Image (cartoon, rainbow, N blue to C red; front, side, top):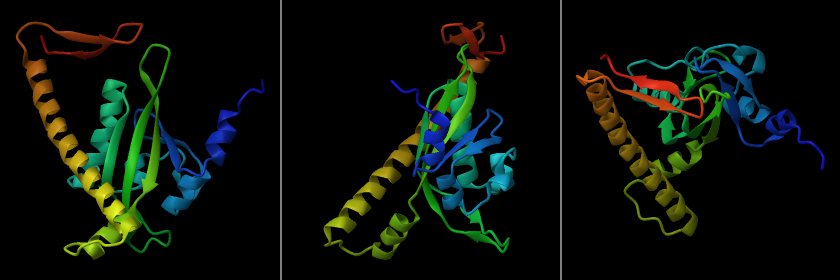
Length: 199
């Protein structure tokens, strides 16, 4: 059996992928990612995600994206954003283009169970969102439009659920940290400490 060249598969994939380190610096990306983000590889490699694609740290989209990436690093588990508006800078530097995305963040783990990299798979759903906006308040009679509308409604429902779960998770972490007895959570075959409280 021929050995697979995963670098070649990554590069040739028609799906946009970017690889980040745990500090969210951009390590590698395929051509599909460069096309969808209107960027050049030399402008992205080594830059932090939030410097390469700036957003107001107080904005919902910044918190949404950063929260997802942080959950992957903290838990070592994949995290998904069904729908996020995250505008990208235009190549000429004259402003931003409104864009909507669906993103999956998958951890690439080291032997000790810690996160070595995060693989982001990004899908541009801007056209679906624009169709939905155009049809807002109107009945959809065409089958394709109804399906697209249903997909976006489900994505928004999942997003609302994720936001509620994230808020509950923050409250539980705060309780965990403040517990009077000492508590630690270890993960992976090497029993790496992933959480400890103040005690």
